[in-house]
Length: 443
Image (cartoon, rainbow, N blue to C red):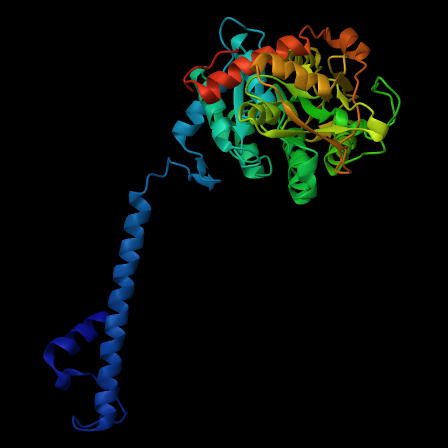
């Protein structure tokens, strides 16, 4: 039935309802007549509502600006859109004073090492874009404070996760990164016993996701990433050298970092990615991680709380090769500057690519007891120590780096001893936690 016929029917009464020639025409009073009338009325209402809904949908579609891409939400943040892309490009732009500078994506940029490395890159004129998921492994407010430092230097930190493939591909679409400084990871040895999946998710799955995006990028970036001295595990030969065995991890964290070294070697071999792994040795300093011993010792000593100091078998010493953050930064920048270009394009290898692993340590292991003594001096507080045997939670008794290779290839030379480094850390800690948080000395 045509729409005009329906309108005529509704407007002029039941006598005008057309009948089909040769068919029975019901009387006005018959039940069939009224059933058919109700059917025509319902159909007309349905048609009207469908028509109005269609008009509304078309209006909303054409009224929406087609030039504005959708924004994607992740972890409370959002990415996408013209303003977001403008900030990404501006942050990643090499400063005119450094025409030969790098364009670097720094993952874990709001982390301890990530913040210091990002600031150092920016100071010399490199283009820097940060990426961080601001997880709550430790107090996120400290990460937000670091983010503010970066933003004041013109570094935009994108809030997102390295497992978000769409986000990573978008970043590489917007910026042609020459280098990736991959520092995002689930850190800590002991936490792995509480939340093992977080290590697999970040240190393995996240790394693979990043490598997948990098291998397909045009051009492929050179990659420098943070491994760990933990890969030496139960190795008893000291000092640790890069060619020593690393097949006896003492913790899940160490196992994931060792897996990362094998995975990066595979992507280097198959796809031509230039990759440099850095084995950090117990990094400390201002803006450090609250889960590190020197950090929570300081916190508890100031509150006159008892601290637990571990010792090895038969009261033997537990020692670490403590490395000051500024020395680690120098090693990271040296690795970036000496990294050769990747040889692949669009996921296809065109020739052999550079693959390296370096120790970044201080070469001077210090016992935990000596660490406490130095803190006592700088804090002017006597520690209340509880001596306990080293538990079976993944901690090893000692670490000691052989840095000969890094000295030769990167020009790496640590210059800060533990006394000097802890003095700088304590000054920052007192300013940040006990003084005005607006004071951000120590850069």
